[in-house]
Image (cartoon, rainbow, N blue to C red; front, top):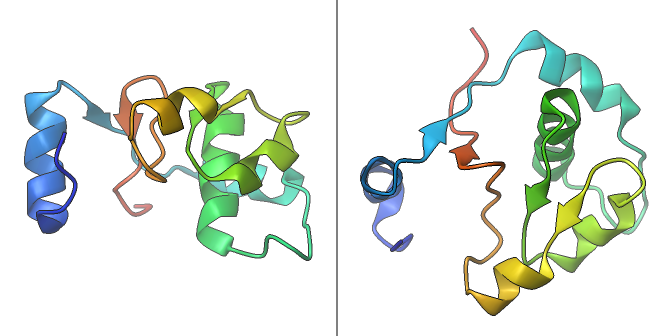
Length: 102
């Protein structure tokens, strides 16, 4: 999957790879408060990704080592992502969060 072609390229690549977009729901937003806050990891979007995985009960795949701090909260699989060069984009059971809450 080529992620260097912008958002449109990402959407097309997801369609080609049969990856569904996972919309952000109120349950995801409510789970945000359950994600621990670490001074060394203050990225609010990362926290929303973690909250989404938590609310969905899905593992999180990322090459970002900062997610390993949350192993007690969600199943974080990052070594596999690094090995296959997926990069820091987060995939949760062949779904990707791209949509805004409605």
